[in-house]
Image 1 (spheres, rainbow, N blue to C red):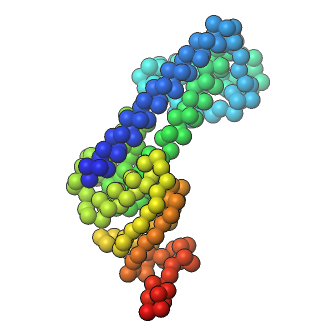
Image 2: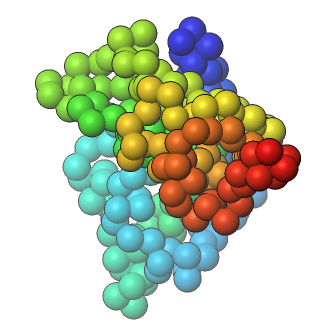
Image 3: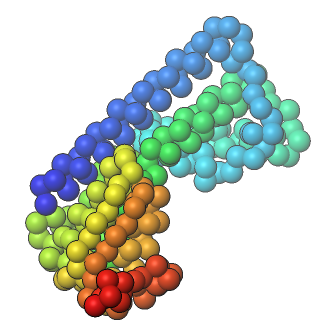
Length: 236
């Protein structure tokens, strides 16, 4: 499972570098706008549409840097716009930066998406543990549902290792894959067998998929129409 651990670490490292570049660029562009006298410009419709949860999620990346009063002041800006009030000079500066910040978060979210998708899909195969991606800690871990202890990849069952390896390479590698699988049902429960191939296709990175199986459950899903009996196909 060393290759899977390395894939986790590389993906997190790439995300951190990307996030740092985006946030640094955001700060630089905001300062540029202030210098050029554009720091008070803002898109009123965009500010109007911002809800508290969107702003709070963005602020999570700055955990500990803002007091409750700071957060309240930020949240007051879209509330003032939605109520039809006029922003003060300071609030206009905040509104301008809020838009920059939300745009940065949307940019980062596109890079985070494969990590979140992998965590969500893989977790559905584990009965007593969960794969967790934390944007605050910048980590991808497997946690026990009983006590929240971190679980090492080497301590997974054979079926869990197979799932973790296959899904991670499909969801986390930035390339389309030609996937050939011989007996994907090995070490997998019937429920897992039924879900595996659709979940692989759901990644959007599986350009071609061929599975050879003895299990009828592997194609007990929407892919059944593509299943072929090899004996019949070769005239045996």
